[in-house]
Image 1 (cartoon, rainbow, N blue to C red):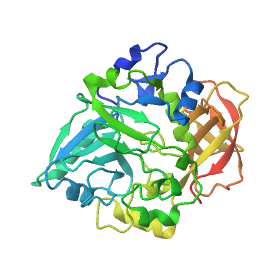
Image 2 (image 1 turned 60 degrees about the horizontal axis):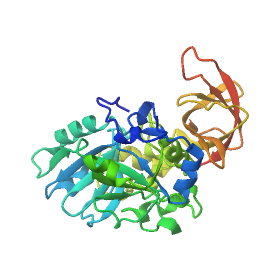
Image 3 (image 1 turned 90 degrees about the horizontal axis):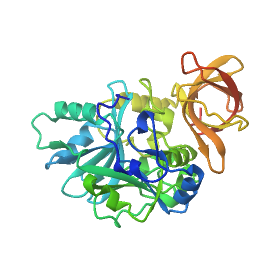
Image 4 (image 1 turned 120 degrees about the horizontal axis):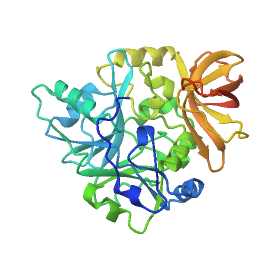
Length: 362
């Protein structure tokens, strides 16, 4: 993921108890003094998460949806007003470059993206616009994002992106533009079905007022619930080799029957053969250590490296858990360890026992 060129510091960091996040979530709060309590409040639907470090693009013009349809992985032509979906920008060889949370309001298409990626994405979109009737505006300095545990698309004053993850489950049937195409890879029981989530766009100068009287939760809490739901995130679960199949992103971000777009050949080939090089797993970690592994720490079978940790979190019920990307050929019942500290030069290393839970079938 491209390093942020500018960090938008949230005024909510001045709230009582706020502890600033680091890394990709710099600029917002990691927690407000009670991470587990904040998680439980999110599960009850009683808290809001500051995501104002995310980038926001606003696209206008009559060609915007057909144009995005032609250059990204999702079916977007004729998307009805009030619809939320997600789509990926892939490289010519099918590697994931950008993940776009997309909301269409009938007059404009709103995209929210990972911190630090908006400049690169806008530059690429401008290069691909040619003579089409599309205008691209970076409104990150004027519009902020709040995360909420809800699937309600109509109760907010501004644009609302409702997370379609994990796809065509009973709890979220029809939540994506491409339910039919990924139904074959969707199971009826998925931990993400219990995680309602939406992003609400509000004026940045009204951010403090928008959360007045509400309990705040930090990214510690929201990331722990994301890990529980097996939800991939650009820049954490992805690297320069990632393809959508490895991360189960066919569920919500890829239309398998649409026309040509960049990276489609790889998507179709791997889908038909069913052999992505790697696969996402959830790891349940030995909780006897107080420390969590870091992004990039090795996952090992005996003394052989078979993958790496992408996101580790301390869940209020599950304890220490992580998402990791491992080799496809790794046996699903293998007894694994995470070598904490192996991803940081000069750090002290320690082995943490880890049990894998299947996310993407090998």
